[in-house]
Amino acid sequence: MRQIHHFVNGEALAGTSGRFGDVFNPNTGEVQARVDLASAAELDAAAQAAARAQVGWAAVNPQRRARVMFEFKRLVEARMDELAGLLSSEHGKVIADSKGDIQRGLEVIEFACGIPHVLKGEYTEGAGPGIDVYSMRQPLGVCAGITPFNFPAMIPMWMFGIAVAVGNTFILKPSEKDPSVPVRLAELFMEAGAPAGVLNVVHGDKAAVDAILTHPLVRAVSFVGSSDIASYVYSTGAAHGKRVQAMGGAKNHGVILPDADLDHAVKDLIGAAYGSAGERCMALPVVVPVGARTADALKDKVLAEIDSLKVGISTDPAAQYGPVVSAAHKKRVEDYIQLGADEGAELVVDGRGFALQGYEKGFFIGPTLFDHVTRDMKTYQEEIFGPVLQIVRADSFEEALALPSEHPYGNGVAIYTRNGRAAREFASRVNVGMVGINVPIPVPVAYHTFGGWKRSAFGDTNQHGVEGVKFYTKVKTITARWPEGAVEDSAFVIPTMK
Ligand code: NAD
Image 1: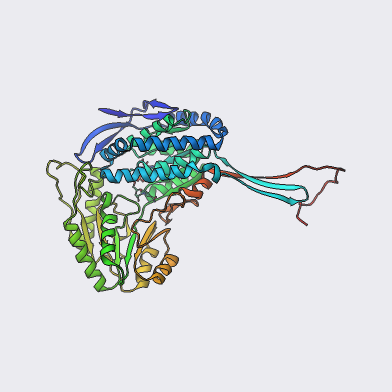
Image 2: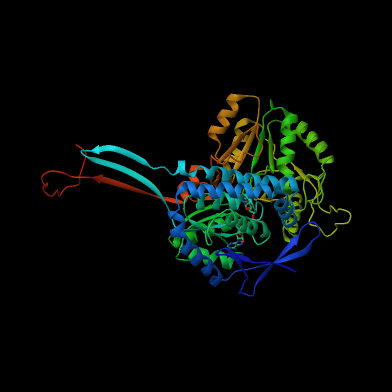
């Protein structure tokens, strides 16, 4: 059986903890590899290697570090097919979607190619008599990233792309469910010219995460995953003196006003609700049509689309989405479907029991649709993370605005309308971090920044863009004077500008 090892100090490192995780092929349900699960000792080896590499790496001038990013981007692009195939085989998303996962990560690498410009500090000449003030951004040291299964290429690149470009070294703890692509990325990063120890990959579960959160050499931790664990990572990391950003789960709403272009909205909605089997933190699992006429028309069109939706194995080019990631996750989603029916929502299309000929043991779930879901239902309040779309009917703009605003999660939201004023007001007032106007999955481009509100993010700084640079650097401000002439008397009061 294929064994997936850690990658530390520029080479594969076999696990010594004696603990392993199974890596499945979600299409067939078979175990295809075993991944090492690290102990605190293995994490310590990575932290020591990263700390040894950091001083030299920070001293490399930013333009040379940027050249490594350029070369890394070229290498990843050249291996796009290989990486996408590997990603799909462990995650279950279709190949085109895996390429999108890698491409969105590369866009952060492109942003990092411009790091010399972004790192330029500020300078004030003559802040006082003969006094100049300047500030610079310096790396933190060893940083770590803990990532979820659903974007095994993009989210690691969100993190190490910026952390490393600004002069830190990095330990990536990817999801143990699909760990192969992160290792390939680290190998390619070395091939691109990064010295050993700059980017390390340590696989594992809670034990590895706890070792990161308590390790004295780790200065900052970026986490993306579910909210309860994000909250735990945030509080534990902060209690150990680390800078932490921790992105959590989501339950994004798509609001459809009566004047929306319904055909356009439904096409977008189907892709955003069912694409990647709903396993996206920016999926749209809730649609909020305003008014009964809008709701009825929307439901008919969604049903027609579901009829022609093709679910298949991740390598089938005709498939629109593939299996979910694991048998446990499949059961969890199916339990939510049962709960939704028990809670009194109308189960219009039931995706349970979906079977694909020849792949009966695969983790497939058919597209599922609920209507008349209400805000008090547990299945509305909680994240399902599967191919399940819930219609929550609203009577007015204000009611539709209140639903995402008052929901515990606040990652993304979308509004469909032809009315610019209504869209503008919605975007301004909604209590959610990322808003799409006639855009279903408003994941901001790499040079803007990604982050939700409420239970979707813990900490103050977002992922990537200038916010990412701020997260991975600290500011130093220098006040300088070069005195000449007679020695002045000592001053016993705080200096002020007269
Ligand atoms: P998860 O929370 O189960 O795992 C995330 C990471 O935490 C993994 O590396 C995992 O090994 C580790 N982990 C698991 N259990 C742990 C524990 N008890 N203690 C410490 N660490 C632990 O999430 P997942 O199932 O891999 O990913 C799906 C979740 O991620 C969804 O909730 C989704 O909304 C969220 N997500 C959020 C964003 C965002 O940017 N807000 C992006 C992608 C995914």
